[in-house]
Length: 193
View 1 (cartoon, helix red, strand yellow):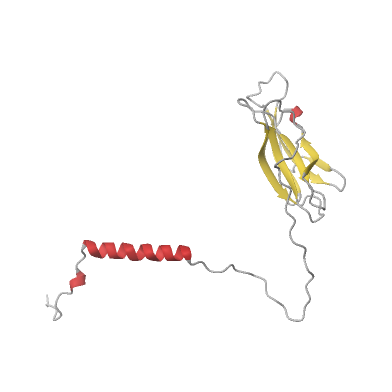
View 2: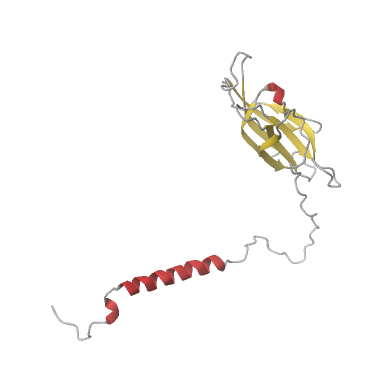
């Protein structure tokens, strides 16, 4: 083996100080990348010679705070367990759909599903439709709002003899606005248990 004409370099051997310096440099790069972020990307390109119509500012969907849900809970309060927003009727103003039940200390209280809206003047949100009445003793799962349709799976009971802990029916449901009311249907390909 031929010996190198260049003497051994001091940095060719690793020492603990080299690892500390490397770790510090890496930590500095990570910290700097967290602080320095690129601007938001836009896909819109301005076309020359075209006019654009001004679009009104987005209307905030109605909130669920302070809404009087048609639900009798006695000494406990009503709790919103799920909610989704979207423009269900195509009027340009979003609605909120809320799954609500009483805040029971034990057991599974039945759910109610309510559609909330607010008037054009931005007044307090109000319930405009009840899709699932808590009196029907149903539990709502797989709740979603897509393309102006509300979908859910409804767990229920085949008779009053079935204990409240153990629903024995499972029914998929879909609601859509038909211009005057929300119409319930069963999604295509859905089966009940």
